[in-house]
Length: 394
Ligand SMILES: Cc1cc2nc3c(=O)[nH]c(=O)nc-3n(C[C@H](O)[C@H](O)[C@H](O)COP(=O)(O)OP(=O)(O)OC[C@H]3O[C@@H](n4cnc5c(N)ncnc54)[C@H](O)[C@@H]3O)c2cc1C
Image (cartoon, rainbow, N blue to C red; front, side):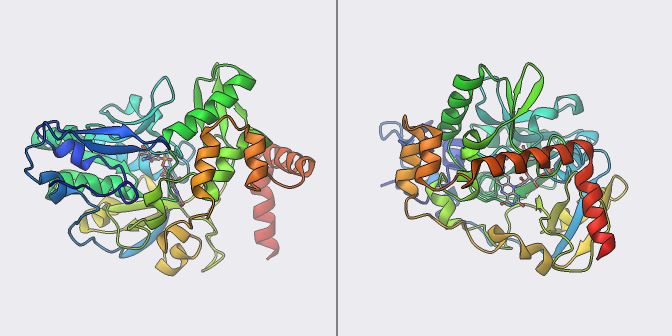
């Protein structure tokens, strides 16, 4: 009897869905909005391939990170969520005739993995989107690209990269994989509820930016008629819930990749707190610094290949780990997690939800003033000047 990983441990990577040549598996939304594989027993021939390839049921030993760099791309630092390293790697792959696979919103703000083969089409892939991306049949498309002798870059959460590796069943010299340091993923359904509330208050929105538009730690913004506008107070609740782990997929709380054994050739994240746990870091940090872990020989070769376009500085693995909880352990599961997910997607207002789970800053007006001052400082570059001053005084 074919039995896939249960709903609590399934990451939704969709490896089984891609591998089944009888189309007996479909990805269906559960009550929390997470996609789960469902087997059509009439179509299933019990070949067992889905079970053999499911990463939750087994995978080859993973490589371990051997070096840690602080890095940013000279050309793309302003375009990425942290140092723009994704764009630098993508540029290299495109220049070498390859295809890039990453997560982008469609025009209905549904997050999906898509393929890009032109530099001019890269923008939708850039930036972190804090929800689970639907991989669909992307692994099949990558296999096709590799079969045609082209290079392919795949970027995703570690469980998605593992899904691809298990789907392919072997490494391919033309494949380069990047896994993200990952705090966890809420469902598309939770994000849809957030968008619905914003649209009720502000009107139709065309896009969304979770992170940087003009500084490393700028607040989430919605985009309306090509203008980006910051969200304030109760409308930021989704992000507070994200940071505190209230909306994640069940498997995220037992993530197998929250350590230095990584599924990608390279791991990228933010180098939070750089210089505070090791030797001083003297580069400007306004637009973000990436943390880059090299996990394989391909990873090392990529760093060498990017040295002209990017700034790299070797730092210790200890420093890289210091402010990265998710390189040491999965996110903690709040005891109220189940009811919190149900509340979020119910008719409960965001303000009520924020109050119930103590997610709102306690003093609203102090918070508003603080974020206003921070916004102005970022806007006028004061943030950098202040940091530089503090550094010089020290
Ligand atoms: C859900 C999530 C949680 C994260 N948690 C942490 C964390 O705890 N600590 C940390 O240091 N960094 C975390 N990151 C990574 C960080 O936010 C940046 O994405 C990363 O540093 C890359 O930045 P960049 O400037 O190089 O590239 P960017 O231009 O920001 O590129 C982002 C890349 O990530 C891909 N991507 C974006 N959203 C998703 C998604 N939902 N699923 C799969 N792929 C996606 C895009 O396709 C693109 O390839 C997380 C990212 C995501 C998506």
